[in-house]
Amino acid sequence: MMVVVSVIGLMVAISAPSLGAGIDSVRMTSATNSVANFLNSAVNRAERKQIAIEVVISPKKGTFTMYSNEPGFERELKLPDGIVIEAIEPAVEEPEFRLILMPGTAAPGIGIKLANSHGNRRIVRLDPMTGFPRVERVQETP
Image (cartoon, rainbow, N blue to C red; front, side, top):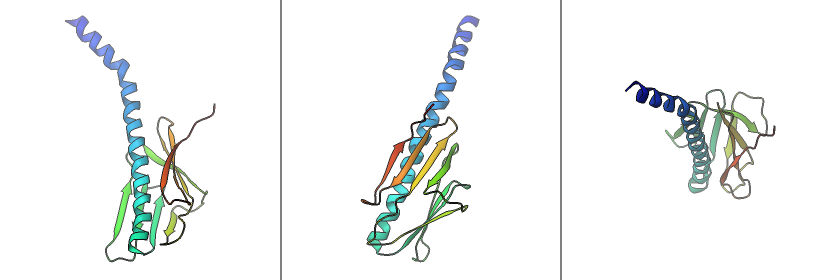
């Protein structure tokens, strides 16, 4: 009985780090998809309602907030635990990045770099030609 319990304990100890990395990978995928969908909904709302939409990106809080001049309209996206906004392209020195989406105009070409504790990084870019966000994996160079 002790041998069986120790073998099971050994298997759990060996598989625990890969399980944690797998969960972080799922969180990263979910976060990048959520950010892409959030930016896409902001662009679509500006075009559909024909109103200006402000998107505020706060790296310190790990939040994205969408505002318009419609009474009571506000949407917020909070990144999951372990995922941070590492950088915003083009680089800004402000604590928050503000983006105005106007109907009938090209979307600004921005990139939001997300990172997790295992060093995985992805960039969500808003394509100025199509207005649709796309996700890119960042390849680390040794």
